[in-house]
Image (cartoon, rainbow, N blue to C red; front, side, top):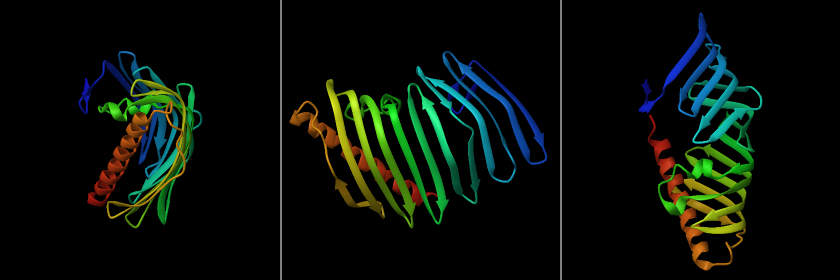
Length: 220
């Protein structure tokens, strides 16, 4: 079958519906080596409990370390602390929306290819292991990003590097970057041309953030 322009070989859903409560005992879809398997329930009042999720895609594997609990009420999303194991890495996070919306994420031994493989532009593609934390906040149409990231043992523009350290503090108001703070950057093999490529990639990141801000503001 197909779903949202994606095909799958077979799928199985086993569920129990009682009044407003929906309990998914097993949901499994498979396509070649890729598969999705999850179980959990919805209480009918905006609260969700995902007890298990396993995902394999493009030789990457994800599994939750503990149940994922979140609520979505009146367009407000709250996600309790969660932990995903992705390949040999770990992604932890929490999302809160009390007055203002913010998300805090921590990565350890996280493979950058999992994210960058979706980019078509070579300058946005890089490999390596990501360590660090990212904070994302949104309040009164202001979008803020604070990141402290270390990228180790990777490759960028066909050049290997041992480590890149970078700290970002970005504030966006009305779709424009009004604050930007850079703390430190270790050069990639001390070659200025690759540092320029890195700065170009940063510029593309800012552009993506601005477009995301415009999309949020335009959402009804």
